Length: 219
Length: 382
Image (cartoon, rainbow over the protein chains, first blue to last red):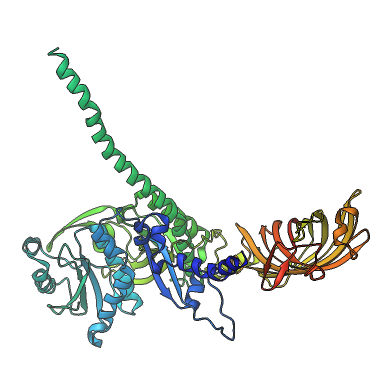
């Protein structure tokens, strides 16, 4: 009897810890579905960062340190369950913050005269709502990077739209860039950040810029 | 018979057709219900983010003086309906009205959000008024004012609020922007719109609320201690019911550690009477601070000195027969407490005087300690 109590006392905390650790993948089978595990977003953090995000849930390390090597993985259920949004849109929207920061980083890393221009943002995505979200995120990310940003959208003549709308995005952006400058909607002090889904099946957004009539893909 | 056959076939088909329609409708209804549930969950988080946004504006106003601002656009996560947008818009308006220090004065501009058509030498432009400030100016619209754009996005496990302010001049420069994110499961701070606080201040208040009862409590406990019979199969002493009171002190602000000292009295007519003094040290193991909403679990270690007399507890006496018995006990147990008001505990107790005793046995032996007694108690704190 005592032997089993010892076993239980010593092994139970580790077992509970293991079962609750989603990294080991036990949550799915225990709760009846691996789908539940897929609906989680897990993030490995330092214990200090985890303590700030989940106060009261993460043990505070002793001031002089302790003999344990601690790791923290916070798992949260996604706001939008699987199936509510299109899979392609979900893939883009669920990582939009990081993607927008990364795209703005490409622009912020450009040489100085170009960097100091007023940046306009244009997004091509088949879904207008998703395009709107991406545009908003990109503008805020550019502002956070310290760039000058405008809400103005460059315009094309009806004939240009007719032609550019018929060709694939790979060729459409350089052509549109030339026409924006020729039409005067993109002035010498302006630059355009273009974000596009170059293939309808893709889940990664491509980014490029247009300045002085020349288009260049950055990613 | 010939007429009955098609009728029977038609009747047999009706449930199938009806089923097909119902399944589709049911699927749609299920999706709508799911969206409604998510919108309900997102609403409080969205309000929290708006509170944080306006609080930031009151601390560092975007403008030096009150400035008219048009709510140019407010969008909710893709997949959500316009009902949520309406609720968020109302909350934003209430916040801006209640916090003039934000420097934003909400202003109405019907032509700004309406579609306008402008024909000029460069062509015909169809756009929203906001996107064509020159036309808007000609229509006597929002020239020189500012547009506030708000976007809420569900990004994985995060709800993200983005806001920007654009000056409504032909260049449409963005003059201010902010992005705030909140993870799923973060408790809503439910801040009052007229007394906004930062998330850190709100958390501080939450901790203050946890500590609202001060460091001292007076507990009244009803405890029962049962004793194990001897290993030879003898009868155990009768369980002793104790009434205890004293004081309890929280040793840390969040009641993570606490200690108590109580005096107890036991009396059962023609059976026993007794006195005791007991002290305990307890550590919260269910979290780092006392919970406002759920039960707290403490692990405790304590010591007691008891003196009992009576026929029913003769086996506990010093001589093992009639007479008074005085002995000490060391106990270890778990206590579950709700709202720092009521608690239930269970413990195992070792009584050193009865180690290797022939009169009293043990329930269990751990770490070389024999636990002769098992106790349970209910406490009320005042």
